[in-house]
Amino acid sequence: MTRPFRRRVLYLPGFDPMPPRRYREMYRRESRMQARISGYDLVMERPAQGTAFGWRTRARFPDGEAEARTEVLVWSDLVQASMRTGILATYGQMLRTAWIYVRSGALRRLMRLRRGPVLAALYPVAVLLLQLLGAVLAAGLAGWAALALTGLPWLAAPLALAAAWGALVLAKSQDHRLFAHYLMQDYAFTASLHGAYPPVLEDRLALFTQRLSDALAEDIDEVLVVGHSSGAYLAVSLVADALRRGRTAQGPALALLTLGHVVPMAAFLPRAARLRADLAFLSERPDLFWLDVTAPGDACSFALCDPVAVTGMAGPGQRWPLVISAAFTQTLSPRQQHQMRHRWIRRHMQYLCAFEKPGDYDYFAITAGPRPLANRFAGRQHSPGRIAAPVAGRMR
Image (tube, rainbow, N blue to C red; front, side, top):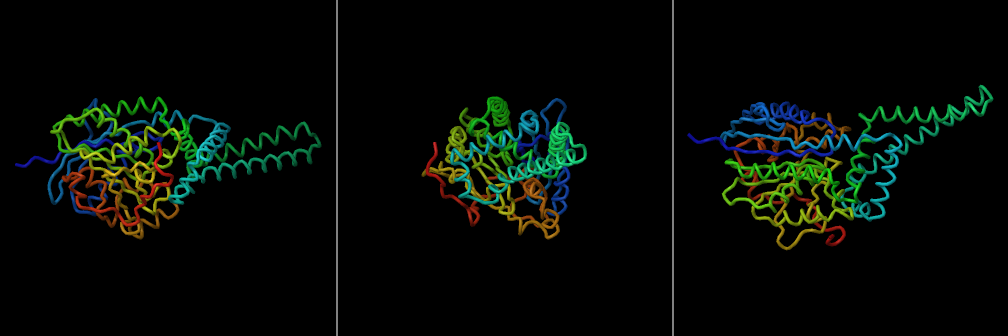
């Protein structure tokens, strides 16, 4: 009897303060839907007690059976810690982050790529400024009303300040709908050290690297590292660190899947030399398969931008990544497209979800199915529209 294909999946989320169980429940819900649409069987199970957070899957596809163990590489606590800032501190972050991107020339380079993610980056600045303007107007109105009703200037000033602060607090309470504070803190975290990883993040990456090295020593068929959004560039550094440690030639196949990447937001910053070196290193590795998936319909990612080439790190021996489109206009049904019409954060998460009209990109077949990533996309060419021209020469 042929044994099932065995896989380890290490999933690295983006800048997300939500606990990792969010991804387990999303996988449970969406995998059921995709299995029903695509006609395969996929069952989720809890991992053994005492193991890292994640889940197991058992699947039966037309071309075979597979078992997979997925682990979420948790850094949400670091995200939560970075978001424990007050309203005034967020405005301070906005000014500092904007200055870093403008002064370094990173914003100018980003604008030469996709307009969507640049507009997404400018969105929190615009919303925060509008909220500040609203607070100023509330202060002026409150001060005028107090002065008109009481004639006491000493009373008008504190009432005006209270009204302004109340307007800002009310605006922040709606951030679960507007995402302005959240996105501003995301960009501020990336730019906090001008593109260098903070020491706490480097420490966490070292732990992740050990997890990956341990997985590569297991008797399995494939180790798949998945990075989504800003987790995509962290996944690049993670895989690069693990490969620099060395691995046995008889070990499992190693694959990297980056989804909805925002690599230029970090790699274009002046002190991101570590990330740029990791991109160049991975791009030429013969013992790796790297697939990059984005979609022009995702305004939060740099769709079809080769993260190595646009950063200027592509050498003559570049192999990776293979850049393909998730083609939302073709793979999402009209119903799904309508549901996500104005939900751009939800569209950014779609790579981890079910497609009602799936093409060759199927997240659940990739992570739980019986075919290694290299086999699934063997012979596949880059999607039309791939952007590979470096925007500012070869950066160092």
